[in-house]
Length: 282
Image 1 (cartoon, rainbow, N blue to C red):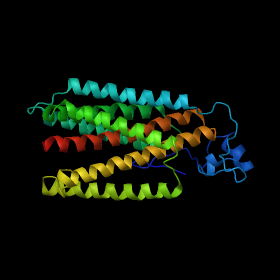
Image 2 (spheres, helix red, strand yellow; image 1 turned 90 degrees about the horizontal axis):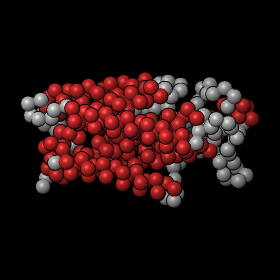
Image 3 (tube, rainbow, N blue to C red; image 1 turned 90 degrees about the vertical axis):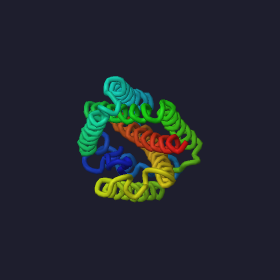
Image 4 (cartoon, rainbow, N blue to C red; image 1 turned 120 degrees about the horizontal axis):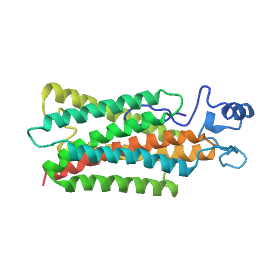
């Protein structure tokens, strides 16, 4: 099964066509590889996942180390852009242009990776670097006009969501099923379409378009965005768990890091918007 990030579709741990020689071919032939066919399949006799033994398989340490690299790259470039790019009124337009340009470049790198059959670490790290520039610019602007406390609140909020979803997932309070997956995909598609319509109205009509990103509606849709991000964290955790259980190749840890980084960026941006609105209403 393929998973998706709130921004765009990405390849998950499934390999529907071809896959990895010596892994997919061997276990598909034996009919014992749910990783290649159905990540949520279990052994009908025991109700437990079938876990084929495999050398050079992905481990939790691999996922943690790759995620640390992607998030570390993002934090470094965000810090540099915050410090080096001016956000005073006289130069704000230039800073915004650089930030938007970096976001578009990051999106292109992410799209290229999403169509690759295998993870490319260079593309994933490049995405993290340019995404960091974008986050650094918008965070610096928010900090300048609304105070540094807003950025810190957004960071803490993102960390709390991550910790809460991880705890709930480990306690099995969140059960990722196909129905859950379908609901999240449908809700995310509707959310993105509404935001696109709002953006079009904002471009041609001025202001905040339909008002989905400011005031009371902004808070409501910001909360919905955070909830969707939390749901995608659960999907990401499920992918990581299945990849480890079913013996995914070690290189797939880069895809896990890529997915987690994009989801955390999504949650942080929504948190930043929520606390910006709350701060502006004070």
